[in-house]
Image (cartoon, rainbow, N blue to C red; front, side, top):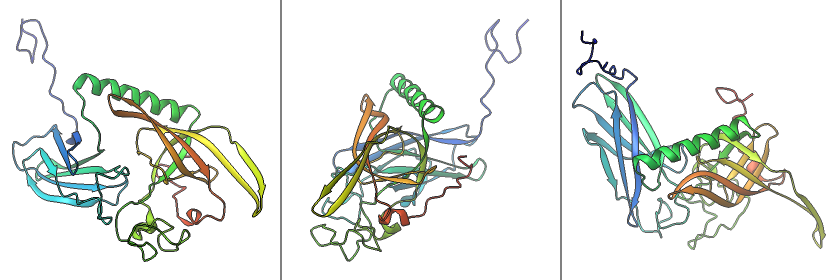
Length: 291
């Protein structure tokens, strides 16, 4: 007797995946100096046509997102060639070393509804290596979150946008404590993107004090280990939510597998309590709550 739902004698056919309608970004790879190739696929879609896509980009996985193109119908890739020359500081430049850029794709369909996904620009991997990277990232995330890590908010500095009047034509910021841009030279968001929440493991404090001609100075440099996302750069700000200590990122070391980041190790310096970065609001009552 043939087993139900089977096309082969003696073998039962696996039932069709009935999960939710989702979108998956399979590749966000830089092509040349000023182009990025984005590719995606749909999971559990019920229609053959009628899917409309919109592509966004931002400097943080929390946004705010800037639309790149809208009205893409039934296509599953896009080549973003809208990047200007690196001398234009109002737009993102791939030639800059500060090129941590995220893409988000949003899809709508009259039957299946809506879905979206976001991803950072990174190198492409084949299926076997993608599985390896996925496992290593998951292991690092579990170790930091359930081990000795604690809740962290990442304030990513803006490197493009509306320039402040304290920034010269050569890109030099003349006021380090500017009330408009917080010394970043960009007035959008007061110089920072929306905070992104993650977990981080920090080392023991190494507080150093010395007396100079200007008086007594203190410095506290530590090492912090965080997951692979959000990607952190020098001059970003880390906020440890449990004690509200804020640190400026100085150096970033990436642990990689086949040019894809697994986790990050940061060298950071604690900011003085009088620093303007303490005026930026960070949600200590995250939903769902951290503690």
